[in-house]
Image 1 (tube, rainbow, N blue to C red):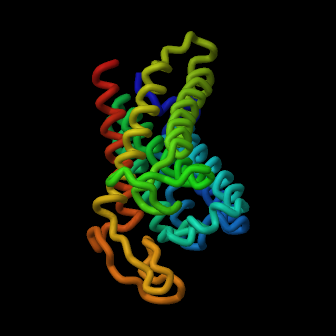
Image 2: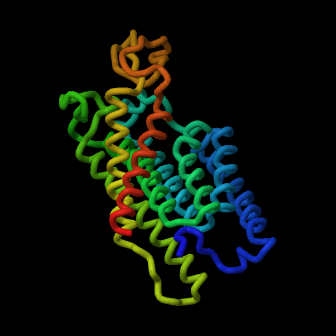
Image 3: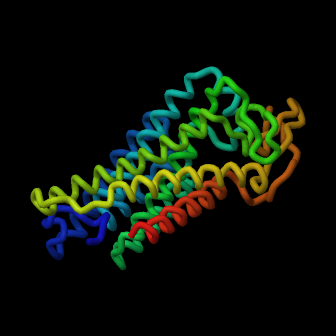
Length: 296
């Protein structure tokens, strides 16, 4: 059985199957993009990227793949909007390279690797693609949850590089609250995949007993997501480009802070937050895929 491509049989009736999914993906992707722009969750270019991505996920993967992407986007967006109302988060966000509505680069950084895996699964169906996808999405979701909830920690974050306290919002800073949020966000992706697999299998098999490796999928999501999130922190501490504000003196991801150009402090110039997210999601996917080889 190829996990992740389990829709009702009518979706596969040639030549209408792919066409139906493409139409559904186009309509659904555009609708979600419009709503996201209205609620300031995406920029206009970000919405275009999301619409294209949604169509790709639906056409190539269907319910499991698109549903999991929506689980990430919807929960992280709601969490971000809720946390944006918290006063303690405002100061931390001023240090981030990007805040507020996600732009096109962020959309592709979070969902592009998953789309590539979805394409691979459509060409050569194998459960390994889905495991890798779980790790990728668990990593980006875990990192998002860690960032949003970690800012509410009553204790200052600790640098993963030096072990010393750092200001909230500093790249490479971790908290116990953020670490717990990363674990929860990772597991959510596993639960989403399992749920959509159950729904898809029920529609396809008409009540036949399910044969889904639930525990394995959840384990892969947890360890892949947590590993990817901590790798993100390591890259943020050692590799991501960081600047020093010449006005307030804070360490920031922004090349312009306090309306003044910042001075380079450390890291590789071309390694920004989006590059870090891509690299950490790949690590999460690799870990999850590796787990599948042991439990398969």
